[in-house]
Length: 420
Image (cartoon, rainbow, N blue to C red; front, side, top):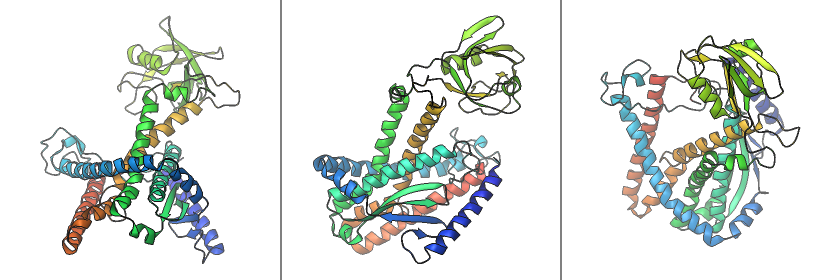
């Protein structure tokens, strides 16, 4: 689907939904409807948070105490990261800039700056990965907000409500709303625990997901539904106009062997397939693809174009090219299970890992409206009032400038291209 068409369709659907809800809930606070978001509050989850927080209060207090120290380190790291990235725009390698040079015109560092871009479907996020991003944001947000709620209840801070919201139709999130008066009466240490809980829990979630991704836990987590040992290579997608498309290869076909130059190469997993592509495949090579269902398909490889095929073939441009996106084939234990579900499951894990880290890092920046700003304010409570306010205002405005400078320079250097 074309990105411009998708964005137009999204805007029209959002306008229609907001208009319909506004007519019915014009003066309602629940749901709360605005041109940018729809928010629904409830108290039904409060009892669940109370129950979780009542189990092992000593553990939770210790857990969130560790979170305070970790949040402080992560806040300092985030500020330094943005500062170093800003400097790299001035001294980075010429190839880092879309204009072909750094801001000073002379590169004194071989390290490139990282582009900081907003999440815009079809612009900075390709539509192919958008479903994974939506699910990952929801998972990260639920963990983040539940951690805030659990920490608050462990320290006796009342909750007004919990809820969900939708921003511009596609981005779903959750929130926990502490009682302001109850929060203000709490000790500074309790406040710090509550504020740090969300980001710290996101980091813990990222560590757990990373462990699952790099160990056999990924396969073992599917053991009740799929055979954990791959027995072929599943075709996830076939790019239009490629040798694979012309030969008749389609998504959900499973390759078990490839014959080239009268030599048959077993393809029992993706590693074997990539090894074949990197060491054997050359342009204009005749290949016989043996499928799991017993069929054979013949194709002639092409010269690889200068494009990236995600999760597919990895060699450099100019080498042999088929045009398929692949994944390990795990045999379903139940006949109705989709062959590609392990692939989608893995993508959700990957994007949840990445976005959990990003959410933790971004949310602890000392910028107005973010947890980092509240965290800093409480840390400065021991300083005399006038000096505290001046210092707090100076830090938050400097960080806001630092963030916006990175955002603007990223656009000027790289443009807004799909980052994921």
